[in-house]
Length: 259
Image 1 (tube, rainbow, N blue to C red):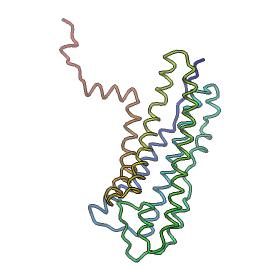
Image 2: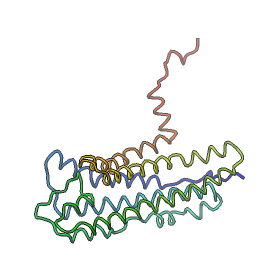
Image 3: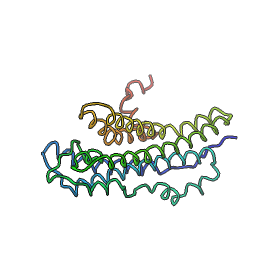
Image 4: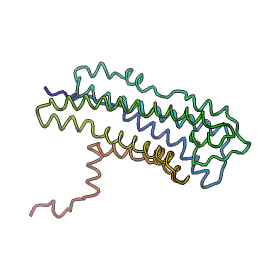
C-alpha cells in the first residue's frame, strides 16, 4: 500500500520563514547600529530584545515539530490529513510564543548603572554574566529551559520520522518511496541546519574558547540559519529552479534554430 498524500499542502514553512525574518529583525538592525554607530541599548530595550529573540526561537522549535507531524500524517495517514492538519490544529500545535521565566527572573537581578554585555545582542546568558548578583541560579535555569525547548521538540521530530521511515519501508514502488523522501527532504535539511547551529552555539559556550568564539557560535544560530532556510525552501520550488537554470545556463539562439 502506498501511503502518500497528493493534495497535502503544508503552510508551516511560510510561518517558519516569517518567524525567521521577525527573529532576525529583533537582533540584526540594533546589532548593526551598535557596531557601526556605537549606540547604546537601554535596560528595557535589552530585556525586550532578549524576550522576543528567545520567544521566537521557541516558536521555531515548535513549528519544526508541526512540520514533522504534517509529513507523518501526509505519508502514514493520508486519508485523515484534511481532518488532522486543519488550520486550527496547526495554530494550536505551533503556539510556542510563551513567556520565558528566565527572562523575567533576569530582569530582577542587580546591574550596575552602565552594564557591559559582552555579546553582539542581548542573549540571556550574556546578560546574566553582566549582572552583579549571583549568576549560578539563572545560568542553571536558562540551561534547563534551553534543554527542554531544544531537545523535547527534537525527540518529537525524530519520533515522527521513525514512523515515516517504518511506513516508507512498506511502500512497494520506487516512485512512492521517492515521492515520500522528496516530501521530507527540505524539512530534514532545515532541522539539520537548526540543530547544528544550536550544537555549535552550545559547544562555543561550554568549551574553553576565547570570547569571540562564543559570540560567533551564537551569531551562526541567530543569523546564518535564518539566511539558509529561505534558500532551502526556494530551491525546492520548481518555478524558481527553472528560472535559476535559465539564468545560469542560457540557451544559444543559434543552436535553437533549425538548419
